[in-house]
Amino acid sequence: MWIYEKRLQFPVKITKTCPKTAQMIISQYGGPDGELSASMRYLSQRYTMPVREVGGLLTDIGTEELAHMEIICAMVYQLTKNLTIEEAQAAGFDVYYIDHTTALWPQAAAGLPFSAVEFQSKGDSITDLTEDLAAEQKARTVYDNLLRMIPDPEVREPLKFLRAREIVHFQRFGEALERVKSRLDSNNYYYFNPEFDKSMQRKEAKER
Amino acid sequence: MEHLAIPTIPVQTWNSVYEVKDALREGTIFPDLNLPFFAAEDANGIKEDSFHSISENADAQKRRETLMLKIQQISFYMDDLRLYLDTHPDDSGRAEDIKEAGGIRRELLKDFARECYPLTFDCMAELYGQSPYPAKYVWQDGPMPWEGACV
Image (cartoon, rainbow over all chains, first blue to last red; front, side, top):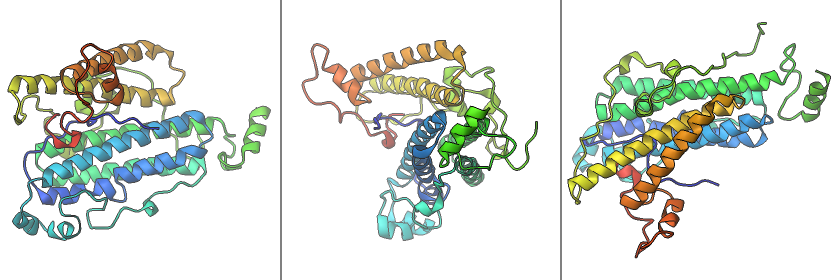
């Protein structure tokens, strides 16, 4: 169950139309390391996560990513809301406009559609949390790249906020991995899959 | 003891936190986790009075925006605190933080519903417990969050 709160997590107030910037930022909506991908990754992985607090963390970060998706969409919307045909053509936004006008559609900056192929839900706690650590780093790099290219302070403020969140999430996933490790035998973390071989985990806990 | 072939991330210990009003701008409540990018070292700042006036009078709008920013600040404080507690469930020292922030947020949401429009369906339902209750359905009142008219 989710409850909607009619506000953004971080304020977005963009006054200048810029389809070029919109076309870059949209990658964090539907691109390989975008917020939609992040949210679906964590919200998919959580069901089989054997450590309860890690399932809770995946729920909370997955939910926050939905709020980040809304921030990104708000930015794209405001950057194109008063778009003219001439501006669309000059910025190369015309190719997006043809299929979507100024509506929001999840795609990468280069036009690739959003796809679940971009993330994994592997059913092994160590594997999934390692993927999550990498995912936060990949998203941070995208925000770094966007911050190099975009000068408008009204756009930069929310981008800086979102980048900062990637680092906090990385830390939390790292701590989650430590919690998973603490329940395993450190002589061989890979002796069994803690998410699937539940009987092994119980046996191990008893022996320790 | 070090272990090969597995990542190790040091577990954070609670140190200092930012003021509620600064944390949102920094993107975290923890100075220890604030690691900015060199190409983003321009001054941070949410411009609190650079809003475009829409149809209503400026005072009402200013009040609404001030309240909204406060809600965003305290809610974000709780968001970041929640993630910390997810991986530190045994840190019993945070009870006061949760209680205080939760109380402030509840009051602000109530004020916003009464003076502007309800942000959640529960906030709306609460309006109907008061007298006089709204003469018309108010869930769709106010701008949509992505419109930028109410930051």
